Amino acid sequence: MIDKNFLSLDLESAQPSGTIIQVGACIGNLKSGEILEEYSAFIHTDEILSDFIIKLTGIKQEDVNNGIHLYQAYLRLISMFEHWNCQNRGCVLSWGGGDTQDLKNQLGLKDYNNKPEPNTWYFGRRWIDVKTLFVAHQWANEQKHQAGLAKALTKLGLQFDGRKHDALDDARNTFLIFRELIKRMSNEL
Image (cartoon, rainbow, N blue to C red; front, top):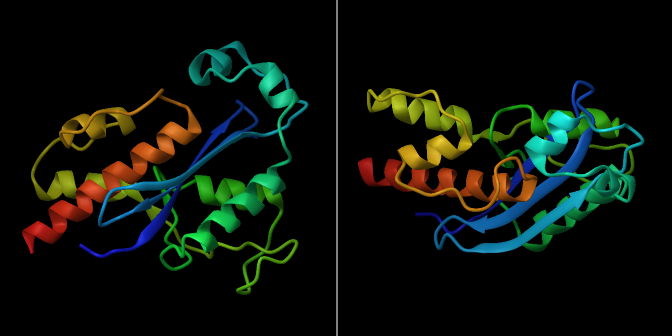
């Protein structure tokens, strides 16, 4: 298996606005499976969180009232990505396809130009959607493919680590699924 580091990203959002209220990320090494660094931040918003979101995520109103600006979290992601020499830009992992686009859109960033300049998107136009990879794996093995993050782990013989709908825990579990799928693909070749 290749000895590369990947950044896995997850976001939690208020509803129905979709405003980002938590950023979670981890850097994992594909070969060893080691989690090299983790990051979680509550994002400041003046929006009042719904009871549904508070119950689902465990994020409290005071967490977002005292949170940091989204751009600060973005700069931390860039720092992590560069420090650990992560796999090519565009190889950010996410469960589903929307988190990187939501982050870019809410920051109001335009396409990248190889430098983390203000108003420029750093991570490229692509990401690795681990959920789609999982669905393809299930189809290839003629197994049921509908599953959320926790159920996908179970179907792969893994256990969910942490609390569901916590951005950091979801990012970590997304990396674990990605690593397991890559291991299975490399063994099948």
